Image (cartoon, rainbow, N blue to C red):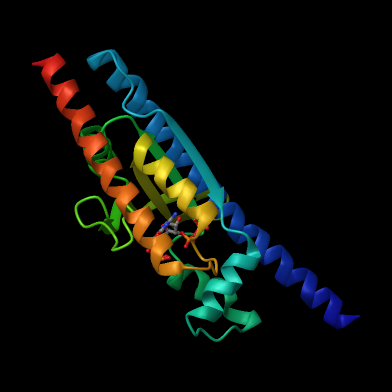
Length: 211
Ligand code: 0O2
């Protein structure tokens, strides 16, 4: 009986922690939507096409911690997650043009209640398989009834074309065992190169129209 009560308590603590991440997503999403509204008034276009957000599932959280070799103890599980996993809260922002990605992310991290913890720029430095996106880990304050707490959120910025490639790659190959892996990876990399050229050309066309 005592064990069940303990388990219930752990479950409640876990849900409370996940709620903090949910609130952090809401905050960053609101900030992005405010920027979108302002930007569209000033430049007569929206800097992003869509925003999607997700909370990492408990199974994925545990799988990632185990894969990375962390010891899991019920009593400090929350601390282990908060200190070592930066993508429990994830937001994906899809823009039409590459320049808008940097413009939007600069406007976001300029805000004085946001702290930029880390940037991985897979647009300037694509992964060897061709994956491109700008990943930023931000820390935002969340105001709960027990006080202010800082929560990390991963924001992935991509163009529509980068998102198309990553979504298809995710379906076909990412984290999967596939036959002829080398050939498939190479063919997907060729597709990624074609997509990079398309993004560049679309940006050039926009620059020409706006010049
Ligand atoms: P899922 O299923 O999308 O949630 P970090 O957490 O940043 O300390 P990690 O996980 O190595 O370390 O970070 P990285 O390499 O920056 O990538 C994290 C996320 O980027 C992945 O999340 C994917 O969403 C995306 N990503 C990275 N590489 C690829 C790729 O080659 N193809 C595709 N389609 N997506 C990629 P998850 O949690 O691994 O997966």
